[in-house]
Image (cartoon, rainbow, N blue to C red; front, top):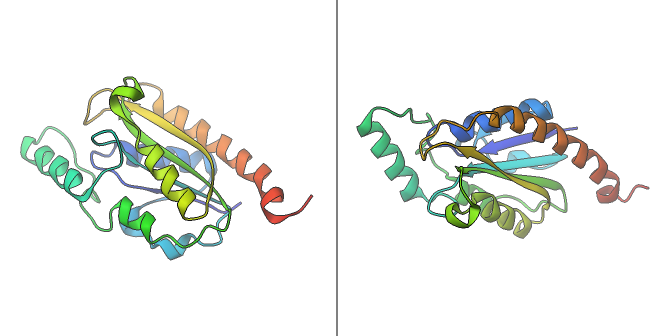
Length: 180
């Protein structure tokens, strides 16, 4: 099965989760600035994720501000691709038609009620559906504070979720390809 995990990360937490999901899938993980939308055509599964900012997906400005504050503070690491372009919103907007191929979405967010924190995975899922993907699942991975670290056990949970996604995508393929 060919799969790929594409992510956006500011403090590195979403990057770590993306790599753990990719391990569970036996796939690669790439920052949105490292891979073109045209490079995902023909995949059996596309997994896309990003951090939750202000109840939803990041914006160019929210990423810039978060990275700037973290760099000034000096206490939090900033992901090397934090303020690279394109951002996830732009990348998803230019994604070619998925033709019903399986996809999944994930986010990182504060360890609190989604009603209070929001979920970037909802916006990612909606955009994937608009681009013609069949979103099989979405998931949130929790951070202890805005900048992290990840809550205990989240990386292992991400690996398991990656393996579950592989099984889901494998079972979805015959339906998508019209094979019984």
